[in-house]
Image: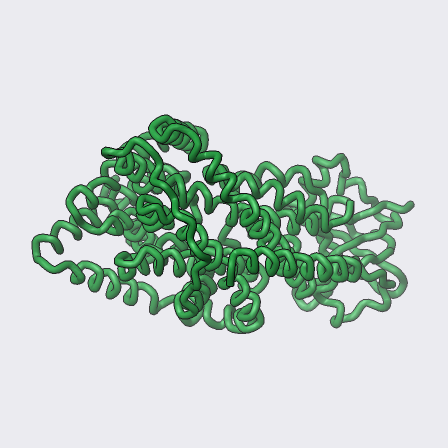
Length: 129
Length: 395
């Protein structure tokens, strides 16, 4: 292969990559689900879920609460590194109150046999009411 | 902002690889605060890492400025540059990157499956294999005198490397700069007043066997934190020093594949070996996220490669239009300043002592790879756990 071939091939492969990225990025947004629809099949997926906050507490800089929509509740874990970034971005995770309606975007994981929603970004928890 | 734009911004930032002492880790550390979205940060990291890898090849090949990833590339590349084959050296590096990454994409699904079980089963075998390779390395000398001399240089470099890493956590850059950068520049100044004229070289074919070996070694290197690519390359260099071309192909294949599989390792075994990979920890939670990063690395690499191929002659021509002596002295100053800014006075101290160690083998007409003891010995000590024993004895 000549140098010119490498240039054309690289540009072609980059172009294909860009197209693939566009397609994947469009489909990679969070899936909006109701709490009652969440199952173990969703583990590893990015979900967008609404619910009421209950049982909020903090431990070692991590904040935990239950996100509930009758009759189901799922644990939400805001880990200390994100909580710190949230505070730096003027969002106080401690400002989330019991009984408040929130929308959480996070990855569904399994911890201790229970499903757990783990937000990753500072704008992942939106207080609605 | 469209997340795709973050890949392009990453590519632009990665062009700073032209100054390889601006390490990817430093760029990531500085950039992290600007991102609130882990996906955007992940795409940016993929953009920076591969663009940096491609663009740092220019100073590594033509000006003996070692980068953390391609530190050992300096030696064979410099040899070729002095023979007027700098373009051949650069082409070998870039085409090896190209083929190695293509192969990495093909191997990706297999590595995805094999990495976790290998992580637990290979570890105990590594130390004996490395020791056997080292013994073979010394026995490759023809006379007993040379065996003893080379072993002494290796151990001396090794002890210096060990103390340097114990003394400063930022020792790698000053150590590589002293051993291979400053020493190579000083050697090239001997009896020379202008840049060696660089011949145009047809685009070389690369050995498929060497690309495959480099790619596989790169994919496996992510399993062992103590075994950095410089060490693996150093061990391979031991056996391939007679052919700088072969070494460049193997080392470049290894470096490119290692960078790619570093990203994969975050997802498969949860281990991040580079600054760029560390920022992916939050984002690589699922197979689709991994796929996004894999595609972003491909976009970054191929776009950067095309960009460099379209500009490298002008870039090298521009740099070579300066006075040879003045430019080399300028590089010595820049390297010293970069060492000072990244590692402080401790770095300058390490560089000052590493330089004569790097000069010893060529002046004694021995292989320059014996200076690699500075990387190999500390890695072996850390890997075997003997570092605590030695530190205990010394303290």
